[in-house]
Each structure stands twice: as C-alpha cells, then as structure tokens.
Amino acid sequence: MALLTAHRRVLHADLQGDRIRAASGSMVAVEGNVDFKSSGMGGGGGMRAALKRAVAGESLSLMDCAGHGRVYLALDAMDVLVVDLTGDTLTVESEHILAHTEQLRLDVQFAGLRGMTSGQGLATTTVTGHGQVAIVSEGPVMALEVAPGADLVVDPDAYVGSRGQLSMNLVSGVSWKSVVGEGTGEPFSLRFTGSGLVLVQSAER
Image 1 (cartoon, helix red, strand yellow):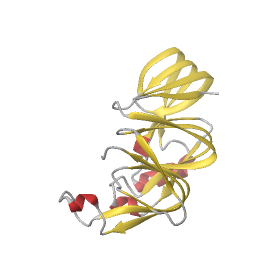
Image 2: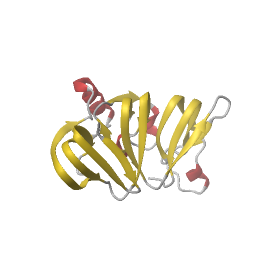
Image 3: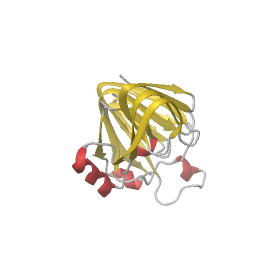
Image 4: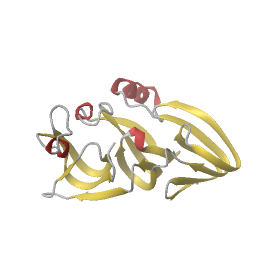
C-alpha cells in the first residue's frame, strides 16, 4: 500500500506497485519507475461529482502517480500535513488537497454559505474511506476541538477543513477584519457546533 509521509513542506509518497492521486504540477522529484498521467478534474466520484464541482465552482485537477519508487510533492512551499482516515470523513477546501491514496473517495458537499465567505465557491470537498490524504496550508495547521456546549468561531480565510459530527453556520456581524478596518462588505465568521476537530491555518489567504 502506498505510504504518504510529510517532511515539513514536502510530501514523500512511497509507491510499491500501487497508485496515488496528487495535485497536477505538484511533483518536484521522483526516484524509481513511476508513471504520471492526468486524471482530469474533480478528483474522482464519477461524472455526477464532476458536474457538482462545475456548478459549485469547486475544481480539483489531479494526476495519477503509479509504479515503484518515491515521489516528492510540494505546492508553493506550503506546509504539509498527512491525515489518516479510518472510514470517517474529512471536509476540506479543494485548494488544500495535495495528494491522497487511491482507496479514498472524493465528493462535493454543498455548504451554501461558502460563496459568502472566502469566495472559494458554494461547496467543499469531502474525503471518505480508509487511507491517507495530504493537505497543504499557509503555515502550520492547528487542530481545534469542538465539543457540545463549546462552540468554535473561525475566520473563514483561516479555515482549512474539519472532521467529526460538526455543523457549520455563518455568523454575521462578527469579523476581526471589520474591527481593524480591513473588511469589505458585511462582516462574518464561521461558527462550528457539535463534536469534532476544525483545522485552521496560521496564516490567512
């Protein structure tokens, strides 16, 4: 089985005759006998998922990496974090996905409010199954816990993803940018309720 390992701002993908999918153009070096080919837009999930992404404005261009050897992957010198999934789901914006093992399924989850927040479209990408997914962020990721009765409010520009039984809602009238005079339009933030983890990057887009 392919193994993904993060080394600060570079991802090591060790292949043993299997395959991973990685963001197009992210390969910086390769050792061994590995073939690369485009797997198109959408990151899997079939034509229906691709259509949902097109409607939502959430696109993800991936390439297949298959063979024996080690592939070095990176995007704009961003920090890399590998998340292990054991049948659960990670919700993440597509621009943060660097690579994933082939056992995982990618799809789109409509969130409605996303077009009003960071401008990344009306949907986020869900990654489900058993395997590994590597995500990138501007600065190290903080995993902040949400528990019943202990809600979490996040600046949408710092939001990377989340996992667990969480609900995400728009909070109008609350924005750190508006306080310092940098906001444009109606101020807002994201409020998470339920139980789970929210991944937040330490630098804003």
